[in-house]
Length: 169
Image 1 (cartoon, helix red, strand yellow):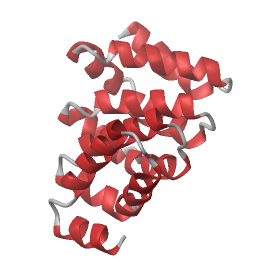
Image 2 (cartoon, rainbow, N blue to C red):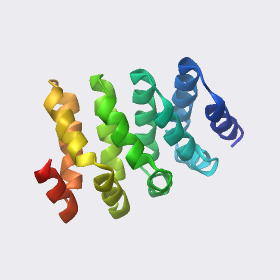
Image 3 (cartoon, rainbow, N blue to C red):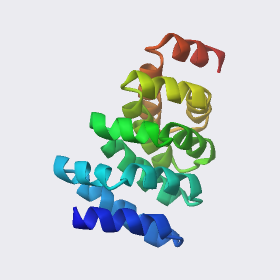
Image 4 (cartoon, helix red, strand yellow):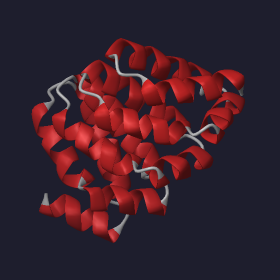
């Protein structure tokens, strides 16, 4: 857990976009293994990722953070930690300002993974994910991000509130 703790602490104080990108990229690689992901979650990486996403101004960095959140959210422990840490609202806000198709795709993938449990779905709907996804679908032209956006819409439509919010958007 040594590297995991150090990376989480470094992410909390990183101001330079390049440093933040490299820290998040290292976390992402470590999270590829169940052991690495569990160590990072235990070290508080989910909260650090949410904070980094909320303060990031670069699409490249937001893209990397969303990709890493996608990896963390593949486990129930990671999903729960991200949801309780405010990831749903942070992802929705990041989606609203994203311009890069890769960033939009990765945010939609992270949204899909978080929507796989009831709490995540409800938090995403409450945060305005349905409207943000509809707007994102309108602006992207490539199929890859559309596929991810449609997948997130599908998962959100599994709840009554999600369906109503998507129809109203």
